[in-house]
Length: 569
Ligand code: ATP
Ligand code: MG
Image 1: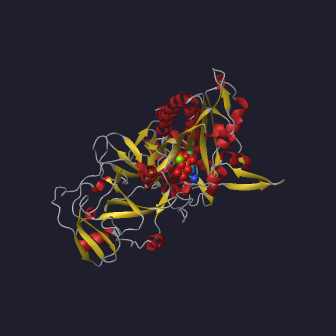
Image 2: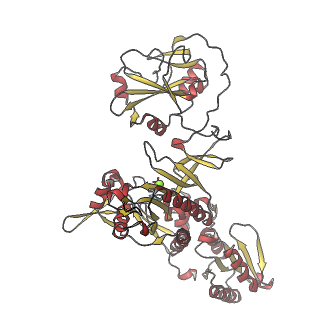
Image 3: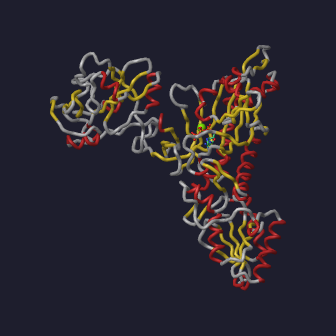
């Protein structure tokens, strides 16, 4: 391909509203062009990368028996009412109406389309297992479309759905897909952490997320480098490290007047104690009535998801108005001498068990207690692991210090069970003659997000560094000096390589060498071949990998073999 005629060129500066590395580099290098927030044009270079990513995904989905089809993007709203997601996903659904008062939904996901389709063909256990997938645009009215192509309103996804006679069969297949997913990310040059996700509060959903470490990611995950395990921050387990002083003697409780701010750090400073010595009470309103005070070390935070999972009722932080109604004063609430009649119960995080002589509020403005001790000055009936784990906690399995990283979710797999087959009457006749609902799984990979993630994970200050497997072209060819001899040699070599199946982007522009070299770095094609009078005099062309500083002079006859080896590696 000649760069001079290629549609979409590099630009001198990134767009001023680019909020992330991928947004900057993909636009500046001519891969994408933003149409509106979260909506992108993919230019020829960008489309080539997507096609390569999709090719890898197709191969791996075929390796687990996936059959490709294409489902419609427009779904009659009746299907979404049937599954209940018309309401539960209302916030992100794009809707449209058509003649005859018909209403449609732009598919944010396709369970509602694939399940009734499968019901038309699946009758007996002999039709199962079955696995169907597509690669298609999805539509979600994301409240915050940001980070370039990482969070779009229209974005590409591979979604696969599997159908089974039993949970056991689904379990087996789920494991196979999990391995195939790891191969996909591996082949894209990424290290994906497999995160077991509880699916949030009271969810019996069983799912795994595949997450790639990047500062542009919106998720926080907790990893143990030794066990190679990854956990979702919201539900991560880990052991709190006890500070020194757990063997202190209990001193006598004192009530004191104090002038201080409301935060834990203000409080610790006013008392001259470390934050872990503050006994913090976080008050929640429980659905259906009642207040719940969660008592935890001042330097730690409560995990809302762990708490909801434990209480098994939805709850939310108590509002200032609610607290006022029962005369509780924010910042001074504690289980020590709680006045009667407030209607609050307490639950303790395990972290408070080993600390002596806490500082805590005295349930009155400007009054605190010093030396409050569990059992003697306050009683907690119920303890649980309610703490939000962070860096420095110890792995519950091996004791290694845990690390908190920012990550982006590139894939997500779920065991759906019979939720959709029951909603859409997808049943089969089993070998025992009984009719049963089909057991389903679903498996997503964000194809456009994956392209953005690769850029976030693989770039330097000059531009993108594409792994060979997904690069838009294998070789970026250019000449220095624009003399006829070099140009003719570059042109000939480009054609020879192309005939042998190597993809070449030939920068044939009459531009300064510096401009062409900078553009090659910005675009990020793995192999750069520079032809110049000097290189020809030295017996060949200059050969350089984008991810290396060194270049070699390689004989023209050897280039094809060298690139072929790099592609098949
Ligand atoms: P997120 O938590 O990031 O919003 P999600 O859990 O809602 O994602 P899924 O429904 O699991 O997403 O979709 C499957 C995959 O599609 C995700 O793992 C991600 O790679 C991709 N994806 C989801 N939403 C977007 C988006 N707005 N833009 C680009 N890719 C997305
Ligand atoms: Mg997800």
